[in-house]
Image (cartoon, rainbow over all chains, first blue to last red):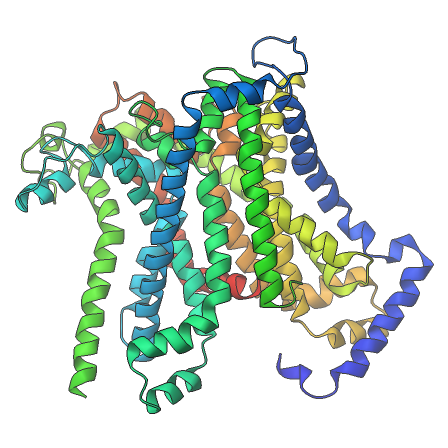
Length: 316
Length: 277
């Protein structure tokens, strides 16, 4: 950054020119050879499976038999399944509340840490690290840990605390509605770390002079937040929003360990539903059709992401 | 000044609350892992175990494959990090230093693959690998791990190379270096912080990877911890809560140690990644 201030422009141009001349000469001297391994891997592991899953979704394949024929039946079956719309509802609830609270908690914690750093408080590193640890624990382990916290007997720790406040015992995981809430809460715990660190990074870009100037002009803490801090980090908040939404749509490891989608199918989110349809019911066609729904969600979120990134500035 | 003092008190209060919320679940798991079977069912539950039954850990180490799971995780994560860097560094270098037609389109396509769910791609791969009789094949599984982290790694490193002045390359080329030597001799040493960041991010993400091993491995002896813990849970008839807790603690200890050692780099890695990526 610092060395771009004086005369880098003409130098840069001359380099580009020499590179161009080379590029015209031989394939060996172009960017392409360097990109071959990357391209091969992405084609094999992304492009091929996507075409394949689209193809499978238009068949009646199952995991056990070899024979199949091409048909629209998987989609018709999927949309007429009594569990399909509730499953989307469960997913919507899970994603919406996970994302909303991960954003909110991440933002508040980041703000508190940055404020503390500004006052040179000791211990901000401890706070940061404690939150971040959750990010590095595999989802199934988080599921197991929360199963223990959510123990419904009087020996369960959360129920013990609640009973001291005169509440409970709460059936965290065996009541369908509560189970979805409990799963979402565990997921908020898990995902706040990542959201916090993005917000933290965003807050570093807020100009200190601007905040000071606003303070001198008599802006209160809330006004500074609304009129100075939030506008600066809106792009990062949007990027954060989309990344964690996609992540939440695609996740099922923690749910698997916590409730296996139950009781009934009250916590069966879309990614888990795909897995169950294919590997428990062996119905590859319907599972693939459900994957297409997930793929469409992924693609539409990516489109929004690119729009946001485009607005933020040059994406490369 | 009085106001500032109260602000500090309020901040500290919030810090204590945050740390409690995030560390209590781990503390409780640790506590259960050191209790005896009777203590687990005690009402009211005690926060700190009275017995400190370290033999639970011995029991878990002896009767469950947790060490195998950990070893499998290390192998998978280690190989993934190496292969990812071998592919992403040259690609990022080319994308940063060469002129190329449709470069921005190429970058957007790479970014788009990043957004696609691992569940969606793993199902066709499962069929393919099963047909080829290649399920459980270590190298093929590593390739999928690599593919999943590759888009992000390439972007991150490309952005990092972009921040290094082109003058460096130029001077080296005048001195008679080839492009490859520019990368290996000049840029790599300077790019070390960026490479360490990618290494950490890839390692953490691969350590937690679930869908890929869960679907592409059907031999429980090859599971990494991120899947293996489910197996511990399923055999709960034999393994009761205190053993499950001990198993969970064992499976997160390596990451926690890594975190405490590298916490400064990790925050650095995440923040630079966030601002630039």
